[in-house]
Each structure stands twice: as C-alpha cells, then as structure tokens.
Length: 146
Image (cartoon, rainbow, N blue to C red):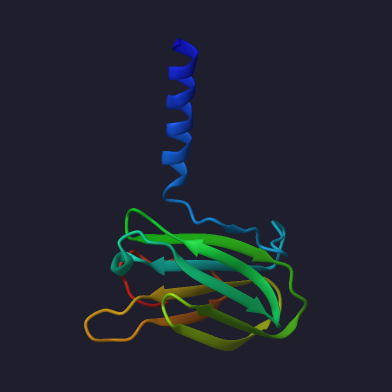
C-alpha cells in the first residue's frame, strides 16, 4: 500500500512538472555546436498558459515544430543550427495565433536570431517579429518585440 502511494505521488509530480513544458517533436537539425543561435520568445499571456503552436522552417526545411506554453505567461527557448555562410530564409507560422512571418538573413560566421511571437492585444493583431545580431539577443518579458 505504501509503495502504491509513493508511486502515485511520483507520477503526479512528474505530470505536474511537465504541465508547463511545450510538448513537441524535437528540432530536426538542432546542433549544439551550430553557428546560428535562434531564441524563440512566446508571449502567451493572452492564452493563459494554453500552448501556442509554432512551426519554423529554415531554407524550406522544418526546423522546429513545438507547442510553447508557460504558466508565467512568457516562454523562451534557444536552438542552434549549423548553417553554411550565405543568405538564408526563415519562416514561422502559428495556426492558433493565425499569423506567419518570412524573412531572409545573412550568415557569415556566428549569428544570433530572435523570433518573437506576440498575441493579439490592445486591438492589435497577433504578430511575429524577427531580428539577428552578431551578439546574443535577449528580450525581457512584456518588452514586446526584438
């Protein structure tokens, strides 16, 4: 009986810990040694912690397929990709947020990118923004865009 109770609490703790995590497929070509660092920020306060689906393509290949969620109202995660020097295209789309973005960027050496999703608020439609920099990019919760 005691073992069953401990097991039940263990399962409950595991499920509680996963509740705020985005459930998803792994990033297909995420490379820990990659030269393109992409940080994805999701301001999900409008959705009250309900996961926001985001797909990201780099040069036409699906790079991310995730449901981003956070109990705090904001979520961010970082992914690294190994991209050859040259011009690349990034596309992002969310069905739940009913918006998408497509931008090009140039990789010379190491590059940092930030993709920010902002939900509909104050009469504005939901939107993505994207920026790149040779230095890391950080966005404070509620800041708005990158």
